[in-house]
Image (cartoon, rainbow, N blue to C red; front, top):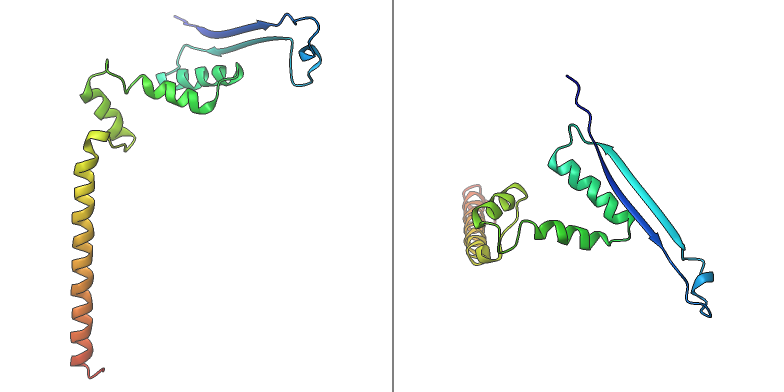
Length: 135
């Protein structure tokens, strides 16, 4: 059995100028735009669909930052369970705001451990130097 599928994103835009204005002659303006993006869809995974949709949104003039923000809003909103959000955080090594205090305390403890180890190493060096007659 053969299965074939295709996904399409289509965008059509036209502009009717206001007569008497100079916007019609602006070199940066295109009075009519038509985009059709197609892709084989039989074996696309979710990430590939999002990549395809990202290309479509870029094509119609969306800002990359807005696109990423929109994608993140699918995960980080009040309608998604916290444990699902945490799975995404773990996958992408992100820290949720409510976990920052705990993270900060871990960093402080780690910094204190590093400082303590550096002091121990320095003490050991001084002891070794004095045992070897180095002043």
